[in-house]
Image (tube, rainbow, N blue to C red; front, side, top):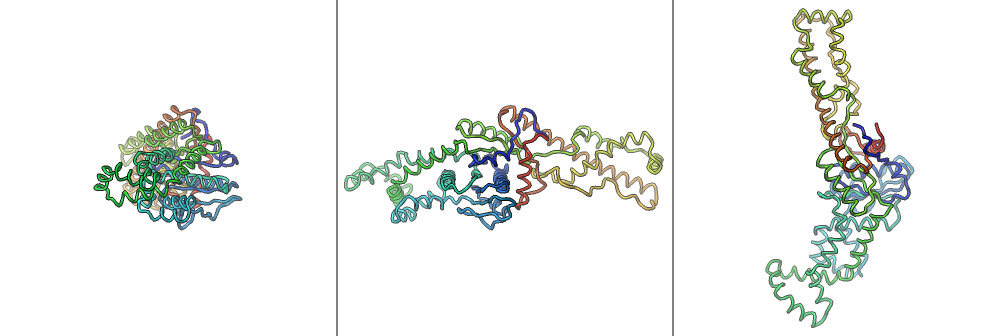
Length: 463
């Protein structure tokens, strides 16, 4: 598969080399390779001389394993084995620890301790809806403010909509400005007997009902938490808004990651439209796990027809006499008819055999080095009978037919991927695209990430 003229090529290296590029955000639907892409970009940028940190929000441990690190946490850890003048560091967002750090940094020790020990805070920091996305924004803002890194690469959360973190500041603001929260904050702001009077009169019905549903202790925990956090609420919103503006700044680049599948590219189209609506700078689309073929001139229809001919005996000579004459022709130089019949098949089979040796899973690659593929068995030293020769030929023809059918299936996959990709580029011709050919297996080390990065860097050029 090759890029068509409607899709502009996405050149990754100039993007990573540009000192003005300070943040790269990888977004896309689940299971399309965002984490691997982010890590591969980090390797590529570091080996080209930049000091890089990769921030992953994916709870899976694949990133740490592929980088040779025992585990990742909320502190950037340097990755060894980078072959270049730069540095690569990696970290995985610890949602609760990030929240704790915010509290410790913006509250005095006594208030911070009261907040951290509050049961409602412990529940909120561990699993409140939207907390992970908001803390990702906080951590990104912290990393950027330190100005320690040339480039920050962000792997977005593994949610259905990987742009949820763009809404996190708004959702947090709505939560903090909600009527329930303001009502709970009012007694603390009024203070003294007036506050207690308001609490007893104005909230008696509500607390009575909620107390039965949630428990009176829960409400007291919530109010204690809000009282302690009151002075910090404005800071949350301010920092979130600042990080949001940072994502809109020219130094940020969004990469939408997708697979050449209908659902994934439909989500990619949504991300492209959403980023445009939010005025976020989109660098382009990374199309992962693209399949190809070294025998693309042999169409699926021709391969299937040839397989049927072999299986039905349309190409196979019939009868023992013909089998004998074919054996004689092979030794003396085959007849023109036999040569015409078998030459196209003989030219195609080695390439098709190499393709069939490569796994056909979504992670498979047509570029594997298959160096020992034999399409015909070794000639027997002394055939015992014509029957044994005929049996051997039949086995070869059955194998060839199977390989041709595998090739036909591969060509159908290629055609489907190309149609899907073309629909996306027709809708969004302005989006630059880089295609990344599939690898034979999963990436599990730094060498694998480097291979992905090389394919990614070459994927924006027409092949």
